[in-house]
Image (cartoon, rainbow, N blue to C red):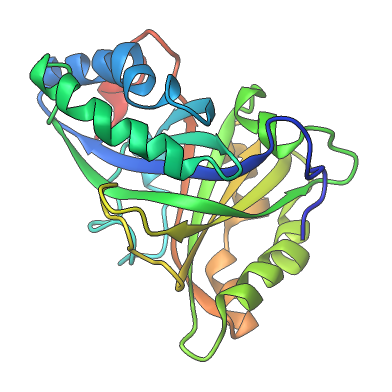
Length: 265
């Protein structure tokens, strides 16, 4: 179920790559990693490729990581691993062309010394769009979500129950859970399902069993946490359709700066 999203329009969102990583803990290497990712990698590795049309990156400070649940998590081990998360939007039907381009470009970037190994992929997947649900009256469509200046994002991974279908879980999130969460500063919920794409880190993990819902918040997520994001694990479990693997809040990075690098751990 999709609300606030008009299919068939120009720049139709169809897919995403969402990558949560843990960077090096060495201060000098961390600063260089941050510079490399923003100044080079996000563009040369993704955004100049066919079909990619939007990008945004968020960070989890120590205070934000302390809110994560459940612990242990099926997504992050330990639960506070994963200091950065980035999302890339792709045009519907474009991922095969994009990754054909990407796999062709990577050897040249490696040879030119333009890759940085100082990170661990905690959760990186290519996804297909399942739903976009907006708070009543909220006008931002899914294809420009990453361009809107949201002040926070909460990522929720869910795993379907053994006797439930992924479609049933996705429909329940769109029609029942998301409308209850979307109130006040919580404006939008976008749900994706992983797809297999050999060559993408962790490709195939969660295909057919896992969903990612990204909640976009107009305030610091800590201000909305108690009223909107506590107890999501109980709600999902109570549906009989699945369980929560991780609920994790993030705030936007401030591009071009090292803001928050000294607050990660």
